[in-house]
Length: 373
Image (cartoon, rainbow, N blue to C red; front, side, top):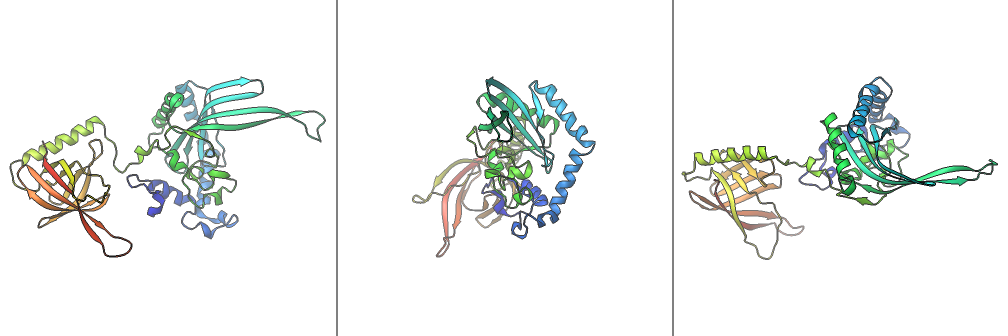
């Protein structure tokens, strides 16, 4: 999908969400449809088939009945199904606390949603109040009552009193459906035009949102939030976080390759950043500096920006005293300033193209590397 759908995040890849939405909603050309002819859009028919398969056949009992039973046994908390068969998600509510005082009921709940359109789920903690009031209708000689409810605050991550139950619910969902990925709150509220053509009853902040597309058009998003609205973003990193075992494997591989050619005078070694000095004093350019670079292969460089992130494998080339690397940050250019057996000095170049005038080529950093040991 086009880069405009990545919502400005450079280090995260949300393309699987956009690809999913593109199958079911006219996100590329919403202006070509209206409330009447949207029924002819191929995605609508796909959604209808998914709803029928999951809710109106034996699959409902097999897939969701068994899952509901699993959650009730594992969570040990009151739980009920909140699925609405008009929308493509299975959902439920875990009751953490309920207090009643005359006609007022206050509850703390965990709401979860599992999309039927793609391998996605999300969780929201809801503090809710419900009040029952007497009503008098002209056509009714006797008074009756009506209930009114409101979400007071939405907790969007494992936070404070929601931390333990939020983590537990998330753990159990992934245990049962290991392929699912968590949709963070900040992604849920992103706008994608065309969704509300299919769900015209969507109101307020939920209109044309990722949440209303993947789950259902409930409006949880006009309420104050608690917790980290970016919780879950690590799951979408282009570079994944590593556990200690994987970090150890990478270090052992780097050390093995480094020792193999330790005494040779060549760029084709494993280098570790020792220090970096700004050359420019009046211009600040923000760029992630890699900590380790492995040039031991002739065409492919292994780059490590942080120890706990998966290394990047990038094409590179050396021409005379110039090194050029393809990176997720773009093309990076260096000049070899000095090469020794145990030390490598590089000058980092950055190309700057102003809106008006000629482009400039800046020497930004002097970077000093030592052989990886």
